[in-house]
Amino acid sequence: MNDVPAQPKRRTRGAARLLLGGACALAITVSSMALATFARADLSGPPGATLKAAAERSGRYFGAAMGADRLNDSGFLTIANREFDMMTAVNEMKPDATEPNRGQFDFRAGDAIYNWATQRGMRFRGHTLAWHAQQPRFWGSLSGSALRTAMIEHINGVMAHYKGKFAYWDVVNEAFAENGSRRSSNLQSTGNDWIEVAFRTAHAADPSVKLCYNDYNIENWTYAKTQGVYNMIRDFKSRGVPVDCVGLQTHFTGGSSLPGNFQQTLSSFAALGVDVALTEADVTNASTSQYQGLTQACMNVPRCVGITTWGIRDSDSWRGSENPLLFDRNSNPKAAYTAVLNALNAASTTVPGTPTAPPTTAPPTTAPPTTAPPTTAPPTTAPPTTAPPTTPPSTGQPGACTATYRMVNSWGGGFQGEVTVANNGSTTLSGWTVRLTLAGGQTIANVWNGINTGTSGAVGVRNAEYNGSLGANTSTTFGFLVNGSSSAAPGGLSCTSP
Ligand code: G3I
Image 1 (cartoon, rainbow, N blue to C red):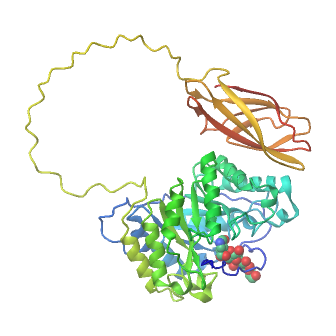
Image 2 (cartoon, protein in one colour):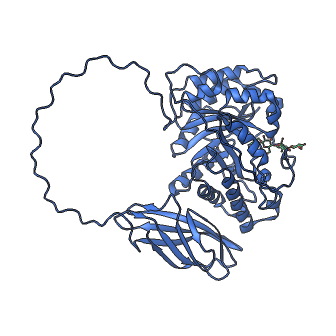
Image 3 (cartoon, rainbow, N blue to C red):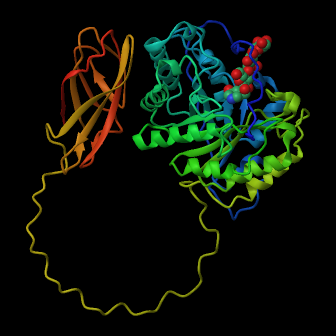
């Protein structure tokens, strides 16, 4: 018998309505971005008295999710400000909220949350860009390449607005079924590669933010869905698809509970080279042992970067009747809060790459060494007589790269292509340009990992900022979507460098 029961029943009433609703198409500018300030990791320091202080000892964060309606709730805001250093919007950055009508973006509610949080030194997790639920109404009348293009345009539009501002983005949310196969959805029907296209698009739109896949019921290592997601991430990493992190929602419901192998799940994902995070934690009746266990599992895995609870008080929860959060309706911390705080303070691993505190030990008082300087004679070896290397300078030369095309996927009305740019030479190339000619009636809708000139006929694609340097015998790829009735391969492929 499977010991991971189904996800708690979802609320199914229509799409979320933005509190600041209306069909306004204005994309307002984020007013400010305060720099998040974080203590250096210091496991030997005093225990933290708040969730964020305790998490920061090991270079981690402790986050919460909030809706725009909480911006007027002083009880909520007081705890959020005191205890949390990462924020996520519950509904306000989902596709239906940010692009209610095609090409008309509305960031007012999301920006209000973002501004409140970052002005208080918090960082931000974006949630979410592509999901089967809470889609803009207009996605419902699209399919195939038209829906694919709408998804790409959505990712580009939202990520452009928040470019450089978030720590993490949930690019794709909940794309797997319980049996480990892909969940059927309108996005899945555009082709199995829709997730990788979403990640490539997101990476091209904002290379600075960490891009996450986020899902529920992937906490038990032996569960089919966990394995399905794991295999996808392993495949993505092996092919260079830009995925940086996996979010495990960690909703433990009345029927499910913390699996004994949770830490193994976290460390197995992390071993693929991604960060892991607990992104929407809540536990029925706030079981102290489960909260303690899920926190400790994260603390034991160096690349587990932080924990977010889906709300703060039970009255904020989508599962409010189960009282699953760390604070009760009167804003009092529960026993589970103390369990989490203690587990954070007991962390024995730090997040790799986190600056650590300088040693606080007093400088040594020992006298400087009195050892005499070495008397060994300098080496008498004759200088090498080998002729200087005749290798050409390590800049690219025209024609030194090759370009190879493959079709990734096609559908009535369009296809996705990929070009591999290879440096088969022995010196590094600094920059490349591929030229290709599209068949009549074909138009490029989107290019990622490259910058195009022209969208039909003769098209040039040069490297993006981050993939121009190609070492000897290495390659990179760029991808593109084409609209058109034929999926004929582009002709006249050539590559030059720089
Ligand atoms: O704002 C309207 C309100 O005007 C209306 O009166 C009311 C009654 O229908 O609905 C309100 O909108 C609701 C919205 O939450 C805001 O409260 C929607 O009906 C409701 O469907 C929506 O639920 C959200 C749910 O995602 C939708 O799938 C929850 O708040 C939100 O917590 C939840 O978050 C998800 C994560 O994104 C992904 N993981 C699971 C998690 C929990 O389901």
